Each structure stands twice: as structure tokens, then as C-alpha cells.
Length: 138
Ligand code: NI
Image (cartoon, rainbow, N blue to C red; front, top):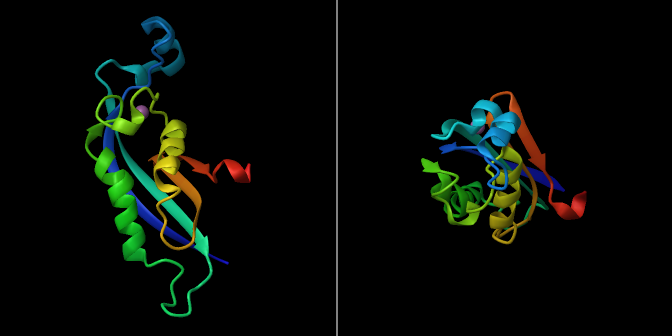
């Protein structure tokens, strides 16, 4: 079994905000991350696919194909967007890095053409990231 990882970057803005709470409660929970005008991040998304090497190609999955799938299903939809308002699949989602990786997983899990989606790591900053392996592996 081999593990193939593609790393991609995107930039987006967001506001951490729970609509069920008052502005005051949101500020207590999220502090400056709940600034009403939002703020931006340069995110790095790492997608790992696992599988066996195919004899015909020598690949688990063609990296160009994996890059295209991630770009089409996720990056093109979130890059330079407001994650609270501009992205169909994130409407109603508080865009923490945890919730983003859960939503991204759903967008990608049935789209991998060869191998299987094994892991996603999403960096919100150089020093803060979340790993997700899908529900079935918890
Ligand atoms: Ni933030």
C-alpha cells in the first residue's frame, strides 16, 4: 500500500460566527476571529490517496489527475472567496478549519478515480492544521 499526497494552496476570507448566539457571545467564543468584516488566511490543503501501484502506469493515481480533481471539486470553489457567503457547499457552516476539512472531505470522497481518499490535512496558518481520516477510520 502506498500513500500519495498532493499539496495545494488557496486564499480565502471568513468570519467565525455561530448565528444561534449573540454578537457578544460570539466575541467571547471567537474573539477577533469573529470580526464582522472578516479576515483572511492562506490555506494549504494536503490530500492523501492510498492504493496499490498499477502495473500499466506505475502510478497509484496520476498526480496531474489528482491535482485536477482537487482543483475542480474544492480549490476553484473556495479560492479568493468569502467562506461564509460565497461557497454553495459551505452555506450555514461556521468556517473553522475543522468544519472546512469535514466539508472538503465530503466533496472529494467519491471523486477519486484511482485509489481511495485516505487523509486530508488543512493548514490555516503555518503552525495550525487539522488532520481528518474520514468517519470510518475513527
Ligand atoms: Ni480565521
